[in-house]
Length: 256
Image 1 (cartoon, helix red, strand yellow):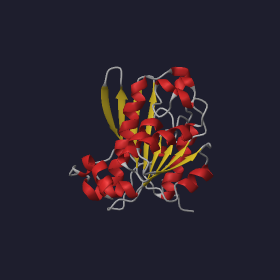
Image 2: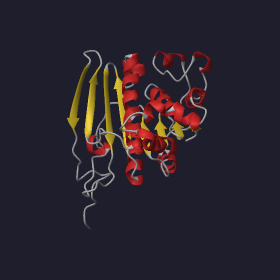
Image 3: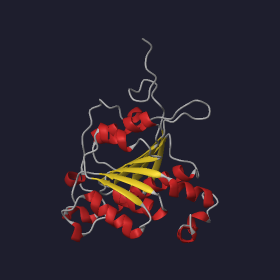
Image 4: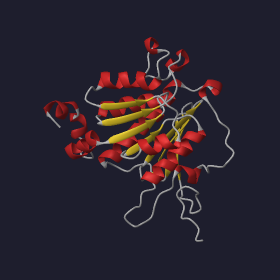
């Protein structure tokens, strides 16, 4: 880091849990964000502000007037633009030192496989079950920790799925351990059910915090835990998650 960067990131460097070594790891890191909407907006802005050096954004949607109630990376002047381009403009306005790759495509298996090849962390800010499952499969295959978030109405959740081998040889659960890929799932969307605007900011900010902790090697992550948020009663609950040995994504294949 040069002198300007040392000054810019000084409030992180002052933290014992991060310090100059942790901030350097953040600056050198590569992150993937899938979804540039309600969750992806605060995630993208906080990772950009914190100095994550290379960020890839994937989203195939365009900015709509109805998004602006909660999707803080976008503006009325950018209605109609691809969300990834709008978010990229906001990120670079905040921190022009970054490299931001904006991919205006739907996240399929091939795209995720290529995008995760050299990533250090992935953040699921998508809004559909199929994309979440595809991203989880790619993260498990590439041994990349996944920071997952969701929000609808006044309810939010945050989790970290890190299936990389631990020092003792064990591994934590993946997203499919909690939500099996072939389970019947009712898709819920903000366009139909609504969402409290600041809730996506709360969840997205927590996702950004978890990602930065993972990159810097700071604190204890939410790996193996699910944080549930009730924004209307402002209550938080944490549930411990267990790995499913029979998980079709991260489980041990049965012997032939």
